[in-house]
Length: 230
Image (cartoon, rainbow, N blue to C red; front, side, top):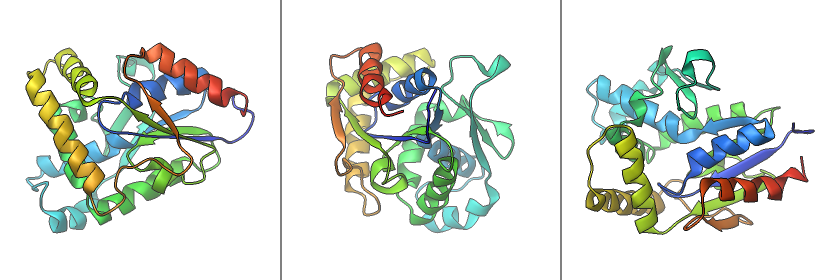
């Protein structure tokens, strides 16, 4: 149990293992896990449902006030393999946002200033007065710049594509390894090259390459590094 309020910020590209690792670290340290990517996926889902193109920044910005997004720890029948329970305007969309196209949608809408402003504010509110582990693309650089521990989780493109393929198969989505590689490379280029809050390691971040490491090994390394400070 954390003895004081503590923030762990994890950034990194798609397929680096951020969500799974962050969830397990949160369980070990008994702190709140905040999946910021899920929030952007929820925005993408809402816009798709309402016929708004992900490429239409103006229309998306105008409709953001219609969204209420909440994150919470899974309880009771929600303990079904999900990392976090996500509600969109009161509806549990935890699994719907995990469909393959929602990852693409999240990557597109996360480029827009209005979207980022709304969600960053919500993310910072979640980290007020409680200990959190938060993962995403700009946590250490933008959302929690004063986090006590900043980590940049990475892995090679081939390894990240393999993980993406494995996850897609588990979710019942049809995708080839070649398509997974292309998706990883496309999202890397978009997220690292965007004008607003590009993906990059935060100053002083611990660079942790997970290629060849098991999830347990990564979690153990992070817990060992931060546990003495909690």
